Image 1 (tube, one colour):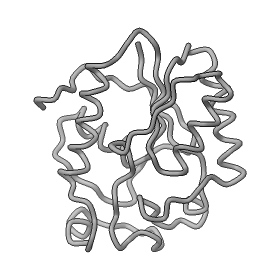
Image 2 (cartoon, helix red, strand yellow):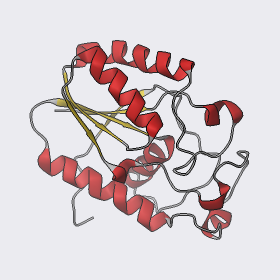
Image 3 (cartoon, one colour):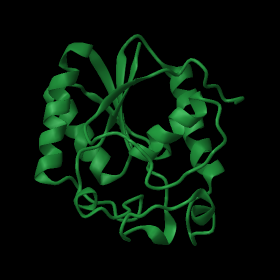
Length: 181
Protein backbone atom coordinates (compact mmCIF):
# COMPACT_ATOMS: atom_id res chain seq x y z
CA UNK A 1 0.00 0.00 0.00
CA UNK A 2 1.25 3.44 -0.90
CA UNK A 3 -0.03 6.97 -0.50
CA UNK A 4 0.66 9.40 -3.35
CA UNK A 5 0.19 13.13 -2.82
CA UNK A 6 -1.05 15.07 -5.87
CA UNK A 7 -1.28 18.84 -5.86
CA UNK A 8 -4.45 20.09 -7.54
CA UNK A 9 -4.34 21.59 -11.02
CA UNK A 10 -3.96 25.27 -11.79
CA UNK A 11 -6.59 27.83 -10.72
CA UNK A 12 -7.10 31.49 -11.53
CA UNK A 13 -5.61 32.28 -8.11
CA UNK A 14 -2.39 30.52 -9.17
CA UNK A 15 -2.31 32.57 -12.39
CA UNK A 16 -3.07 35.86 -10.66
CA UNK A 17 -0.73 35.00 -7.78
CA UNK A 18 -3.26 35.68 -5.06
CA UNK A 19 -3.75 33.87 -1.76
CA UNK A 20 -6.42 31.23 -2.34
CA UNK A 21 -6.52 29.26 0.90
CA UNK A 22 -10.05 28.08 1.71
CA UNK A 23 -12.06 31.21 1.10
CA UNK A 24 -11.64 31.81 -2.65
CA UNK A 25 -12.45 28.16 -3.47
CA UNK A 26 -11.81 28.56 -7.20
CA UNK A 27 -12.29 25.82 -9.79
CA UNK A 28 -9.58 24.69 -12.20
CA UNK A 29 -8.62 26.61 -15.30
CA UNK A 30 -8.47 24.85 -18.69
CA UNK A 31 -4.73 24.37 -18.03
CA UNK A 32 -5.55 22.94 -14.59
CA UNK A 33 -7.92 20.40 -16.12
CA UNK A 34 -5.24 19.39 -18.62
CA UNK A 35 -2.74 19.05 -15.74
CA UNK A 36 -5.18 16.69 -14.01
CA UNK A 37 -5.46 14.55 -17.16
CA UNK A 38 -1.65 14.45 -17.48
CA UNK A 39 -1.31 13.53 -13.81
CA UNK A 40 -3.75 10.65 -14.32
CA UNK A 41 -1.59 9.36 -17.17
CA UNK A 42 1.48 9.41 -14.89
CA UNK A 43 -0.48 7.51 -12.20
CA UNK A 44 -1.78 4.86 -14.60
CA UNK A 45 0.88 2.24 -13.76
CA UNK A 46 0.61 2.61 -9.97
CA UNK A 47 -2.47 0.41 -9.39
CA UNK A 48 -4.50 3.15 -7.70
CA UNK A 49 -7.60 1.78 -5.95
CA UNK A 50 -8.72 4.80 -3.93
CA UNK A 51 -8.66 8.59 -4.15
CA UNK A 52 -9.08 10.93 -1.18
CA UNK A 53 -9.52 14.62 -1.92
CA UNK A 54 -9.71 17.90 -0.10
CA UNK A 55 -13.28 19.19 -0.27
CA UNK A 56 -12.22 22.44 -1.99
CA UNK A 57 -13.30 22.79 -5.65
CA UNK A 58 -9.81 22.74 -7.18
CA UNK A 59 -8.91 19.47 -5.45
CA UNK A 60 -12.32 17.87 -6.02
CA UNK A 61 -12.20 18.64 -9.73
CA UNK A 62 -8.64 17.28 -10.01
CA UNK A 63 -9.63 14.12 -8.12
CA UNK A 64 -12.72 13.56 -10.28
CA UNK A 65 -10.69 13.85 -13.50
CA UNK A 66 -8.07 11.41 -12.18
CA UNK A 67 -10.74 8.97 -11.00
CA UNK A 68 -12.50 9.03 -14.37
CA UNK A 69 -9.23 8.50 -16.26
CA UNK A 70 -8.13 5.63 -14.00
CA UNK A 71 -11.56 4.05 -13.53
CA UNK A 72 -11.34 4.44 -9.74
CA UNK A 73 -14.73 4.15 -8.02
CA UNK A 74 -13.58 4.75 -4.44
CA UNK A 75 -13.37 8.57 -4.24
CA UNK A 76 -13.95 10.41 -0.96
CA UNK A 77 -13.66 13.97 0.35
CA UNK A 78 -11.97 14.93 3.59
CA UNK A 79 -11.99 18.49 4.93
CA UNK A 80 -8.95 17.75 7.11
CA UNK A 81 -6.71 18.00 4.03
CA UNK A 82 -7.95 21.46 3.03
CA UNK A 83 -5.43 24.20 2.43
CA UNK A 84 -4.36 26.42 5.34
CA UNK A 85 -6.98 29.11 6.03
CA UNK A 86 -5.13 32.39 5.50
CA UNK A 87 -7.87 34.55 6.97
CA UNK A 88 -8.20 38.03 5.52
CA UNK A 89 -5.15 37.47 3.29
CA UNK A 90 -7.40 35.34 1.05
CA UNK A 91 -7.88 37.06 -2.29
CA UNK A 92 -4.91 39.38 -1.70
CA UNK A 93 -1.74 39.35 -3.85
CA UNK A 94 0.79 36.78 -2.72
CA UNK A 95 3.77 38.34 -0.98
CA UNK A 96 6.33 37.22 1.53
CA UNK A 97 4.51 36.74 4.84
CA UNK A 98 6.34 35.68 7.98
CA UNK A 99 5.02 33.19 10.48
CA UNK A 100 4.64 36.01 13.01
CA UNK A 101 2.56 38.04 10.57
CA UNK A 102 0.35 35.03 9.81
CA UNK A 103 -0.18 34.41 13.52
CA UNK A 104 -1.64 37.90 13.83
CA UNK A 105 -3.69 37.83 10.59
CA UNK A 106 -7.36 38.19 11.51
CA UNK A 107 -9.44 35.05 10.94
CA UNK A 108 -6.41 32.93 9.97
CA UNK A 109 -6.26 29.34 11.15
CA UNK A 110 -3.81 28.62 13.95
CA UNK A 111 -0.74 26.61 12.98
CA UNK A 112 -1.51 24.04 15.67
CA UNK A 113 -5.05 23.54 14.31
CA UNK A 114 -3.80 23.21 10.72
CA UNK A 115 -1.01 20.75 11.52
CA UNK A 116 -3.29 18.91 13.96
CA UNK A 117 -5.98 18.17 11.39
CA UNK A 118 -3.39 16.90 8.90
CA UNK A 119 -1.75 14.72 11.55
CA UNK A 120 -5.17 13.26 12.48
CA UNK A 121 -5.89 12.52 8.82
CA UNK A 122 -2.53 10.76 8.37
CA UNK A 123 -2.97 8.74 11.56
CA UNK A 124 -6.49 7.68 10.54
CA UNK A 125 -5.25 6.86 7.04
CA UNK A 126 -2.45 4.72 8.44
CA UNK A 127 -4.83 2.81 10.71
CA UNK A 128 -7.47 2.25 8.01
CA UNK A 129 -5.34 1.34 5.01
CA UNK A 130 -5.97 -1.72 2.94
CA UNK A 131 -3.81 -3.37 0.32
CA UNK A 132 -4.46 -0.81 -2.42
CA UNK A 133 -2.60 2.32 -3.44
CA UNK A 134 -4.22 5.68 -2.65
CA UNK A 135 -3.96 9.13 -4.20
CA UNK A 136 -4.42 12.14 -1.91
CA UNK A 137 -5.39 15.24 -3.93
CA UNK A 138 -4.63 18.27 -1.81
CA UNK A 139 -2.70 21.54 -1.55
CA UNK A 140 0.83 22.93 -1.28
CA UNK A 141 0.40 24.00 2.34
CA UNK A 142 -0.66 20.48 3.30
CA UNK A 143 2.51 19.09 1.72
CA UNK A 144 4.61 21.69 3.59
CA UNK A 145 3.00 20.67 6.88
CA UNK A 146 3.58 16.98 6.10
CA UNK A 147 7.28 17.65 5.37
CA UNK A 148 7.64 19.70 8.57
CA UNK A 149 6.07 16.91 10.64
CA UNK A 150 8.29 14.25 9.04
CA UNK A 151 11.32 16.40 9.87
CA UNK A 152 10.15 16.92 13.47
CA UNK A 153 9.77 20.69 13.02
CA UNK A 154 7.38 22.82 15.02
CA UNK A 155 4.25 24.04 13.21
CA UNK A 156 5.09 27.17 11.25
CA UNK A 157 3.57 28.59 8.12
CA UNK A 158 5.00 31.37 6.01
CA UNK A 159 4.50 32.56 2.45
CA UNK A 160 5.64 32.08 -0.10
CA UNK A 161 6.60 28.54 0.81
CA UNK A 162 8.40 26.44 -1.71
CA UNK A 163 5.75 23.92 -2.56
CA UNK A 164 5.37 21.83 -5.66
CA UNK A 165 3.99 22.45 -9.11
CA UNK A 166 0.33 21.93 -9.88
CA UNK A 167 -0.23 18.29 -10.78
CA UNK A 168 2.94 17.06 -9.05
CA UNK A 169 2.99 13.51 -7.64
CA UNK A 170 4.94 12.70 -4.46
CA UNK A 171 5.02 9.39 -2.57
CA UNK A 172 4.29 9.97 1.13
CA UNK A 173 5.39 7.85 4.08
CA UNK A 174 2.82 7.48 6.85
CA UNK A 175 4.70 5.04 9.06
CA UNK A 176 5.41 7.60 11.79
CA UNK A 177 1.92 9.05 12.23
CA UNK A 178 -0.36 7.93 15.02
CA UNK A 179 -3.20 9.44 17.02
CA UNK A 180 -0.81 9.83 19.96
CA UNK A 181 1.66 12.12 18.11
